[in-house]
Length: 119
Image 1 (cartoon, helix red, strand yellow):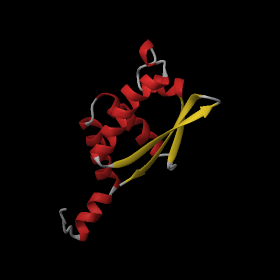
Image 2: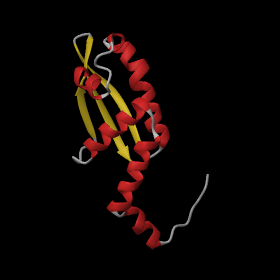
Image 3: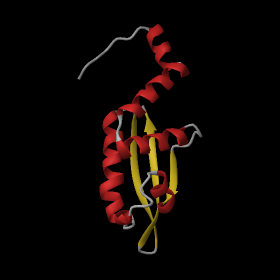
Image 4: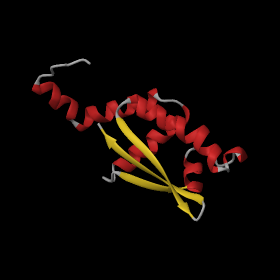
């Protein structure tokens, strides 16, 4: 554990919108692949001021850039090979804590809800 003492002027500089945008842009560029795509989607929804967002599976596949991949039509494959690695990458980066919960209609998953807490 590390403790850093930041003077009030430094805290003010970090909280200013211009600097936060720079930090957020750096985060988006340091992530790769599906992690970057998920971060961009969530950062866009964050600006709406909501702590969660629900995407239908078709919408999410399209936004993640895998709509044309036949192997990701099954929820299990899409979750295992696209969503879980992307969530791990975003959570590992440290600027946001994201969780995912599938929404079922009967026995099949039809949507995914993401909940986040920005640090």
